[in-house]
Length: 141
Length: 141
DNA sequence: ATATCATTTTAGATATATTCTGAGTATTTG
DNA sequence: CAAATACTCAGAATATATCTAAAATGATAT
Image 1 (cartoon, rainbow over the protein chains, first blue to last red):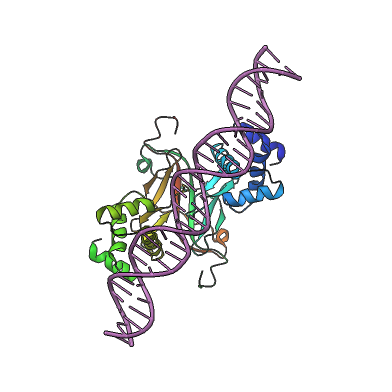
Image 2: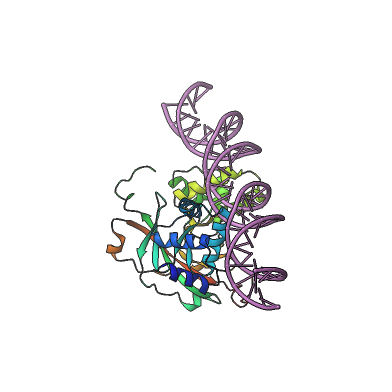
């Protein structure tokens, strides 16, 4: 996705393409990790120090609402984000807490009985265990 | 699980069965929702006001480490907990943020190629959408 | 282009969640 | 019992996220 496409995607979501918003989106798309809001804030301001914390949070919220960004379900304290687009599951390391992507594959849906009146939008797998870095050594944190 | 079993489970995890720790564990087991640390703190102190916040957090950490309690991966601000034991998946409401259980069913594991050197311990599904309460009305938050 | 209006940004204050500190208490061990 | 260890406590400190009110920006209609 290039600049023009980002702009279109933003506007399709009913959002103006402001420099601050664009910067957040572009950073997330360039990233294959899952930055926290604080990291995004820092990264955006490193390039062109022009976004306040509130704006970063506002834009993240707006982008999530517009479906362009996903808030990753990780139980650590700080929320983590990634640009939607490529679907993937998530692997969370028991030891270091790192979040990594796992190649997407389809997952069977639950019995409609189990869902009841709920309306299902998407489902995602969370794997837990030890990441490649933490796996070999059984050691301390 | 009755009192004696809780005591055993705690000790098997290398933890003493203190009144505060027991209270946290017993409360979580009696619960089929997913309380936040603040709710657990309040509940424990409602019965017998004897646990400080720090102790509640410490005990939750210890219980998670011992594998008796699970920290639910929900992206809201406050961490949520449940007693392990019955396996289940989780449904998170887009609108109200509520976390509900979905009946457990086995999920296919990823290709070992996709996992690489990682060591898999467990995997869990996260469903997103609208809960029964939020589903009918398309309205505001 | 000028007025108007909604959207967005900002700095800092505030709210919320979690962890830390250092001292005290209980429990186990030798 | 004495000593070591585990645990708890209240409150302070930190981390994370949201709110506020004013100013800036961009869009739309004259």
